[in-house]
Length: 421
Ligand code: 2PG
Ligand code: MG
Image (cartoon, rainbow, N blue to C red):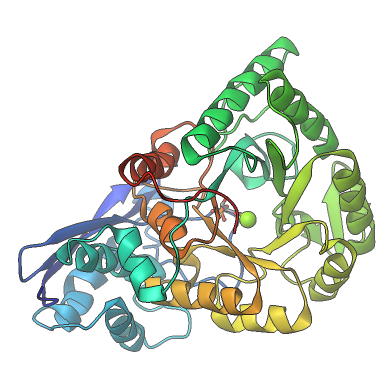
């Protein structure tokens, strides 16, 4: 195969929230063509790589991405076209150097990540490999179908209700295989819809496809989700379907206090509250339980609950290898959320995951609340064998695109193992 780049082209498309984003197409000299759609978050970490938006109030309320598109079609294309590259890492290093900032603010992380993903896909296709196979080959990892974490109830910035916690996920850890995990997710989702309707709650959806009823207390939601799991015929817990939470607490942390349902709580109050929740409900994972700036709180949370719960850092870590290294040293959490656009290139994402693996930290591959039909993260989770993926409800095209990609892999490669790692 010839890894010479023939063309790199971007255009402005829409994401699942009706906001502009980029589609990038990369063509290699041998004619191989690959495309990428760029995701976009709403509850973003302050140290994330920077999305470039036009700021022109006349178009999409300033959210247009024509400058990022132009950066791909001019500067980035000029730096890549006609050049032959060894691997995605070499392309990514070229992009990082061309950008010249520590957070991809000049060219835009949305421009850079679209090119990086399209290149990774093109290089795999040119080798006649599935993308996940190419990732596994480059990382020396064993592919594994991840436990899907379906976000069935939305709050926070992802829904117009008064629920402060952002995500209530169901994780069929006990399912015998990936297709059965998807069936469990869909069945519990249906049971939850019925439960909500029976109790007079609306069943409209939030940004990630979960229901967005007018509930406020996180414990009330947990009771409903447990009820739905059991009504669907599953065991609530790690043997069957467990619960994972992403409160996205940076969003309700103000002046050193966590504002949850009209209460103002200290870090230690929050830790007590989580300990009680873990006691009373089958919760196995807590993401962003404390805020991105509350490092001392994270250390205490980990000392208290790290043996019982997977404590995943999202906003606090931003998929950033340097910050993850610091958190490992400080024992702040025991797992990292992995979002490609938070750091901005495929190879830096793989580096973040490598650092976690070496430290015995789990990695939780994630979508963004604004998505396209791009299914890169399904291949990333499968190829690295990290064992867990969250990509929203078992509903809506941009969410099921990822689950369906894994159903196809499970059908084509029946020997792939399934489950947590
Ligand atoms: C999160 C994500 C994805 P957003 O907080 O984990 O669920 O949300 O993309 O809005 O940052
Ligand atoms: Mg999060």
